[in-house]
Image (cartoon, rainbow, N blue to C red; front, side):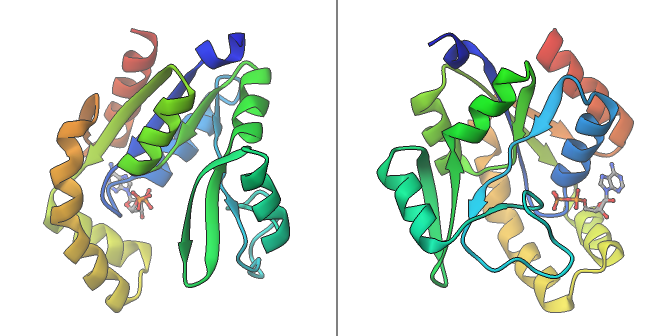
Length: 184
Ligand code: ADP
C-alpha cells in the first residue's frame, strides 16, 4: 500500500477567499508537482464545461456503482444530485508522482484521513469586507453573494481544525507559504 503513504493537501476556506485561484496557480506553476483532485458528479454538464472540468461527470447508475465498489468513499446529495470523492482519481495523481490538491470541508477531510495517512489541511482566509468585494469583482449574482456572506462566519469558525491557516492578502505570498508548508 505504498501509495497510501503519499500526501494529500486540502485547501479550504470561505467562498471568495481564493481557494480556486490558489489551486490553479499551483498546478499551473508546478504542473509536475501538483494536480487538482476533481470530484465525481451526476449533474448535467453545462455548455462551458467538459469531462473532468469541473467534475468527472457520470450517470446516476455509474455513481452508485462507484459507491458500491468502495471507490467513492465520501459523497453528498443535493437537490437529487450526487457529488463525491473517488479513490481512483487520487491514485491516478499519485501514480504520476504528483500531490493532489483538494478543496473540501471537514467531513471531506475526515473521509480522506480515514483512507490516507498523510493529509495536510490548509485553511485560507481573508477579511469579510475584502471577500465581499472579491465576490462582486468575480461577478457573482447578488443573491449568491448574500448567501456566501451569511456562510462566512460559520465557515471561519472551522479554521481551528485545520493544520495551517493562511490569510490570503497577497497571492504570491500565499503560494510561497504553501510551498514552504509542503516542502519545509
Ligand atoms: P474561492 O475559490 O475561495 O471561492 P476564488 O479563487 O474564486 O475563491 O477567488 C475569489 C476572487 O478573488 C477571484 O476573482 C480571484 O481572482 C480573487 N482573488 C483571489 N486571491 C486574491 C488575492 N490574494 N488578492 C486579491 N484578489 C484575489
